[in-house]
Length: 621
Image (cartoon, rainbow, N blue to C red; front, side, top):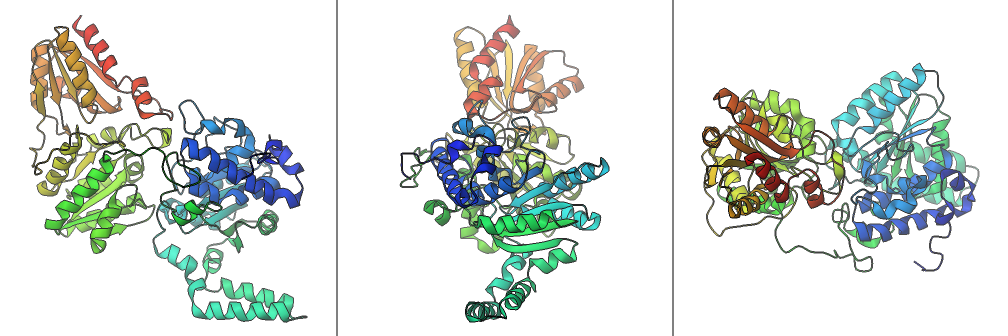
């Protein structure tokens, strides 16, 4: 990139009206500037780089032809939207992306009228687009509705359900399938294989070469041969599948050829009913390191543009890594353990398990409900399935947890990663609700470790007790990894760490370290508190209630929603035991928390030792 005037065209595009004034032949140059702008900024802030680089030309073409915000563009998955944000008036704030009080890393309607629908999870765009389009029809309005679905989102059941209805309703809606053969990790599943099968057959390759030669050297047969070539491509390809489902199929189209896309978009705009445009793109396009290592550059911390290396490396192991290494270690001797994830082998750490036990690892695609029922089936046959899914993604499998696991008392182990406040991904990804949505399900056991060693103990316990168990642990780095063998915990038994008569402080999860700091300060001030590491949100240790009975004052601390969470269970226990006490709940407040540094967000929510000390002082008086 030349330093001088390296964003000459982009600087002119302060809004979409200015974009449409650019000469058509200059649009590819604009796309290149957008790509370089993204690379330069994400190298400083971190973010979802690969997916956004892959849709630069697509985004420019969309906004060049369509008229946002009048026309509704719905992004799925939401981390494809960086170029969209840059072109829709947010370029000057793009350096704040995913930073505290800055731009959100996903589409956010409250941030811009051009963000037609919010999306941080996958597979929702076609449903939302169909709903918007049908509402348009019922209100006799006139605008286009475009769903951009890609990066593996078509593997999700929600998308397939929406396609089924869209073909049936025949409502005017345009679906753009951004086919880069990747979700976060490589796409899996029969649909993905079907979509690319025809291109890998020898007969297709030979026909393509023969027809190419004829087209190049032929004369009057050119148009007919082009038509035949496209027909052969569609036979056995997704075109036939989508047309059978009621869609007008357009493709496949080079998703980095702006002129070809403009032709395809115009065709879809002039076609009645539901259309699907099949684009072939390269994840990480235009930045060699991102193209070569698609998984690493899917979501990345700040990095050096020239070398592609992370700028800040942490020496400690993350909780994800500790879980993964521990699971592999336990699976060496316990052959009933299997690993299951939903398109997140790297994110959950199960790629390590896959490498060691490929026959015992299963990636089901972006299909969390299926992952849970699949695990239940395995548990029914005597295996020990460990279902590793982020807290915010597991929400999508709630019915399966109740109906297929807990109702049948099947020993599925839920390894709930990213529990609590996750940081820069923000409201769509914070794991604020898992204690609340799991605690009231009969037969479920819920654990949360205070540190790395306790995570290992809890995982081992889960493999031994034969019941539905959830272990929640945060995004971040583990501490206190003891050089010892794992031990089995007594289900429902907490750890009494300190004893005192003035106050009971009971915490669950890694927020314990803040509780311990607070205890030390209070102890120096002469306020003697009993400090409890609860370990289990369910079943809850009744000894906690007895401690509260003695002190008459208590504080519960958790990195989960204050509504229906661990603190609520403490209140319920005291009510059942007829204990009258002054109990304060410190937890995530009843609102959606924005993105930002994890420590800053925890402080905002009062999950820091200073606030715990302040609450304790006021409580003791």
